[in-house]
Image (cartoon, rainbow, N blue to C red; front, side, top):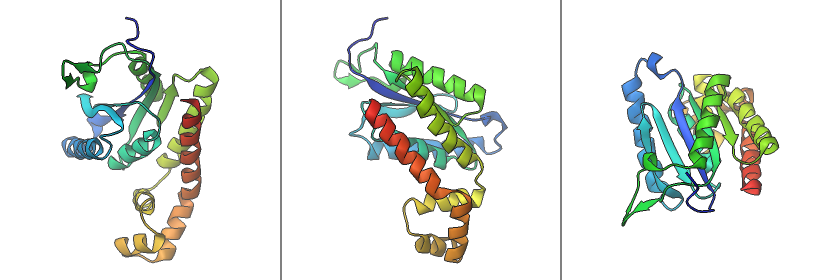
Length: 216
């Protein structure tokens, strides 16, 4: 099937890792669905079509720009902690029309190289036990981008549950406010963030965002 137009898109496919072994799978799915609904509200002007669950514990995102990609990866990954998501990110065109008559299609009804590349990246990520892999920018570029996501994935896998909670809170608040929220001293939060290499994670996320922006 030929691509419908020359416009490039970005697709994210996320899937829960070893979901069948999760004891509270139904509750976790509810959390993920609630987060998807929140993302659809907050990013309505950046999503080509609404995010939705497409099969089992899998969901798909279609964007026409890179600005929210890294933020969405982090947001969805944080939602399921201490469980893990694997992601495939693809860049490319669409082979089907976004709208049918006056109604937008559901993301699962769309097809094209953007989804094929995201699927390929997800399959490889699952096989390599990687957090997220990226395809569609060129062989060398994909390798460099995926190197950054591998670094981020390795950092995230090393976090304890408490470190992950502090990291998520510290993205939105000062350390003192995080300490008050969790009822601990600021030094406890500071040491935990240091052990989690929070600043390295932030720098790596910013570099991944800048690299994607420069290539898209």
